[in-house]
Structures are given as C-alpha cells and as structure tokens.
Amino acid sequence: MTSLNKVKHVVLVLSGKGGVGKSSVTTQLALSLATRGYSVGVLDIDLTGPNIPRMFGIESASVLSAPGGWIPVPVDGGRTLAESGGSIRCMSLGFLLRDRGDSVVWRGPKKTAMVRQFLTDVLWGEMDYLLVDTPPGTSDEHISLAEQLRSLTIVDGAVIVTTPQAVATADVRKEVNFCKKVGIDILGVVENMSGFVCPHCSECTNVFSSGGGKVLAEQYEIDFFGAVPIDPSFVMMIEDCNSGGETEGAKESLLDKYQKNALCPIFKEIAGKVVAKTSPLSQ
Ligand SMILES: Nc1ncnc2c1ncn2[C@@H]1O[C@H](COP(=O)(O)OP(=O)(O)OP(=O)(O)O)[C@@H](O)[C@H]1O
Ligand code: SF4
Image (cartoon, helix red, strand yellow):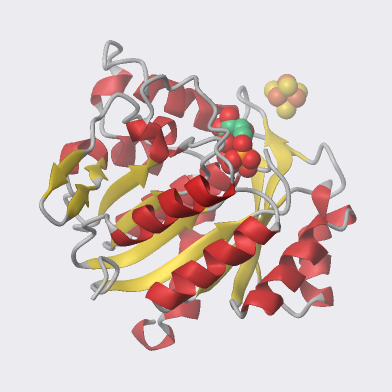
C-alpha cells in the first residue's frame, strides 16, 4: 500500500532540456483538468529548480505533517471550482527549502532518497490525476526515477514538452527513446513558446518557424497535443498571484483568473486529449 494507491492516473511531464516551459505546462494542465472537474495533484520533483509553488502562487505556504506523511498544499486555499468541483493540491521541495533562492545541489543517493520519500510519503488520498513535474533531461537519474515510480504505481504515460527550436535538435528524439527504454507510453507532445501573443491586440505572431512539433509527432507516430504561444499575460498572472494579495486582481482565485487567460482554451483542449488518452471510456 503506497500513498499513490488511491490516485487514478499518473502522468509525467518531461522535457529534454531546461527552460522549455515544463512547469508552466504542468501548471496549466492541472488548472485545465481542475476546470473540467477533476481532483488533481502536482508533484514537483525537479529538485534543482522547484518552480511549482511559485507557479500556483503558494510560495509562502508550509507543508503540514500528519502521522502517515506530508499533507499536500491546496491551491486557492482548497477552494473548489464552484461549477466543476475540481481542485488542485501540490507537493514540492520548494516548500521545504528554508531559503527559496537556494538551488539544490544534492548528489545521487541523497537526491534518490528525497525523490523516493516524495513518491511514498505524501498523503494524496483520493485523486483523479497526479501530474509529476520531472527534472529536465534523460540521465541515469531519470531512469532511476522512472523505475522507482513504476515500482510504486501504474504510470499512464508522459507528456513531452518542447519548443519550436528544440524540435530541430536531438532533445526530443532522446526523450522519445528514453520513454521507450523505461517502458513509459508517450501520451503526446506539446510545442510550447510557439509564436507570441501581442499584449495589445492579442494577435499571435510566429516568431520562429511553426509546425515543427506536429511534423515531429508524425515522424515518431506520437500524438501532437497542441502548440502554445508565448503569452506575457500568463507571466503577469503568475506574478499577480505571488504579489501577496495586495492588488485587486490578486484577490481573485487563480483558477478563476486562468479561465480568462488566452492560453486557457488551448490547454482545455490539451487536457481533453490527456483525458481521452488516459481514460478513453470516459469520453
Ligand atoms: N507559453 C508561455 N507564455 C509565457 N510565458 C511562458 C510560457 N511558457 C513558459 N513561460 C515562462 O518561461 C519561464 C520558464 O518556464 P518554466 O519554468 O515552465 O520552464 P521549465 O522547462 O519548467 O524550466 P526548468 O528547466 O528550469 O524546470 C517561466 O517564467 C514561465 O512563466
Ligand atoms: S501585433 Fe499589432 S498591436 Fe501587437 S505589436 Fe504588432 S502591430 Fe502592434
């Protein structure tokens, strides 16, 4: 019996290299699944840069301990979306670091032990989806992580995040091979930072060549989940959430705010594809 026993679906979010927007994609996938009525957990095991608390505006939250393990931190103070009934809870090393500016430079065994503790000692309870934000790359550490996770639960599959520039490199190929090697299905590919949404007129301009993610998905016979443009209003929304609730906007819940964001409809579709791939009968 592990703390993951009552979690219906486990989805990994992977990227071949850092900074492609893996944490942003994890965050928006969680928000979109919650707006569809699912209870969602986000496990941030990117120990070198645990961004998830900031993404959800819960950086100053403390993790409480109970006899069986850690209690994940609720987003929006545990408020569920009135209409959908969805909710989000998070666990990240970021909550446990005293100085949030610290980058964690732990070596092999200590890192492995921490990841294992994160996988076994968090009291998720009943949950529809657990999204796991992994460190970027495909090192031995990742193989060990995938093996640990698979020994504890059934992993539905992985969402691979890339950018228009990265699709031209070997990064995504490495990620596809990694999934094959560790026996994790690829649910689909998301091409992030594909174009730029003008903050003035909301027009989307393709700054780099577009369509690479789709071509790549066809080449590897994997599903293309969608192209997500760079939207400065998404970054502003996150900053607003972390501003301590002083501005008028910060009083609104993150879930409510996100529903007004230009990226929300794109991620609702992506979330729909994840749901279809993980529970085809529910569609
Ligand atoms: N589509 C987008 N529109 C606007 N900003 C974005 C988008 N995607 C990512 N960002 C921003 O780019 C920065 C890097 O994104 P993020 O932290 O999600 O990347 P990552 O791949 O998880 O990075 P790391 O490798 O450090 O874990 C963040 O400030 C994030 O808010
Ligand atoms: S997209 Fe339109 S509003 Fe935005 S910068 Fe270009 S011309 Fe100006």
